Image 1 (cartoon, rainbow, N blue to C red):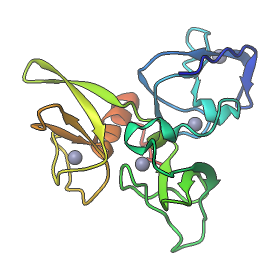
Image 2 (tube, rainbow, N blue to C red):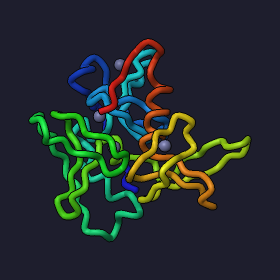
Image 3 (tube, protein in one colour):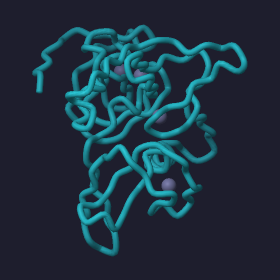
Image 4 (cartoon, protein in one colour):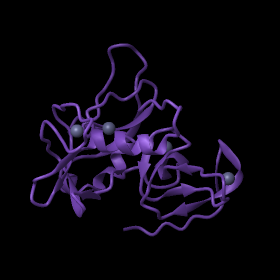
Length: 195
Ligand SMILES: [Zn+2]
Ligand SMILES: [Zn+2]
Ligand SMILES: [Zn+2]
Ligand SMILES: [Zn+2]
């Protein structure tokens, strides 16, 4: 893994404080693009600010996060950031969560494999820990899915990526995992649209 040492970063929407590279693995909402994020990010160290931005929203860290996924390494995938069209009928769907990418927002596209990913789905943690029946279960991101998952409000999916326990007994759709994490991060009474 690359060591990133950057000081003196500011973001145009939070010019009053310098941001620090934060190695936390906790989920957050990016204040730059308003999409979900999980893992290292730029944070405002000032207590009470809770300002977080994706590294690539600061245009400083390398864009190609996507190749970090073990199941994509060695393939000919080459993801680049582009902006989605706002024209009706031109919507693209994310290969990881199978949710449409909002028109006019930035996302990753691979021309070789014709894959699209939300910015947030391009930096998913490769493993997550879940407490299932009072047992800590490590679940690994896989490029496959079951129709239903652990999430009690799961709606059936027809594709996408999922987290699987090592014995394959449990699975959690990326779509459902993101939905849960975003709900936990959103204060009651605030409606947040998934991007
Ligand atoms: Zn962002
Ligand atoms: Zn601040
Ligand atoms: Zn997605
Ligand atoms: Zn699900």
